[in-house]
Image (cartoon, rainbow, N blue to C red; front, top):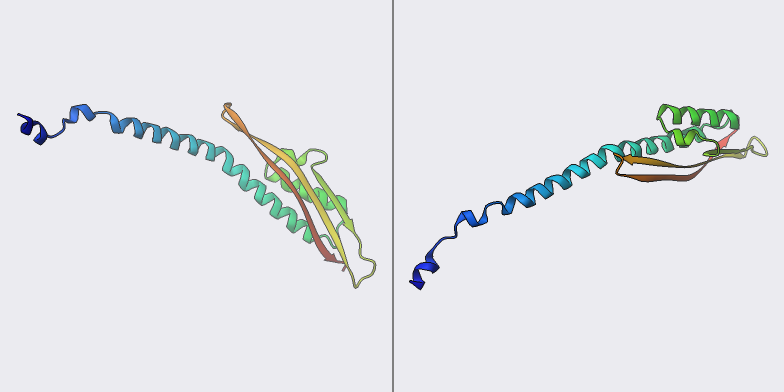
Length: 140
């Protein structure tokens, strides 16, 4: 009789549902990650585009006033729908003119703001940007 029990194959009825719980948990975790990515990734990408644009604008500062540089940066923030960058104090521009035509001037732009990414009312993620960009230029 003992020998007969050792050879018996396990019943699948005892194992029913064991794999389903793990699959459901994995599926829920994947859904949460996808939902978070849908909200967070566009914000990260728009911040990166904005910083790249600020670097480009600062690099073309040779014949432009500080006010014009700031206006161009604010226009880019509006285009990318970054309201936090449009608030007063978020963007500071300083332009130093060269002492002579043979020396370089410097355009320094400080970008500082924090974006709150709302995660479907459950929580929010703070995405902070604090960057100082200094680009040399020649007066033409």
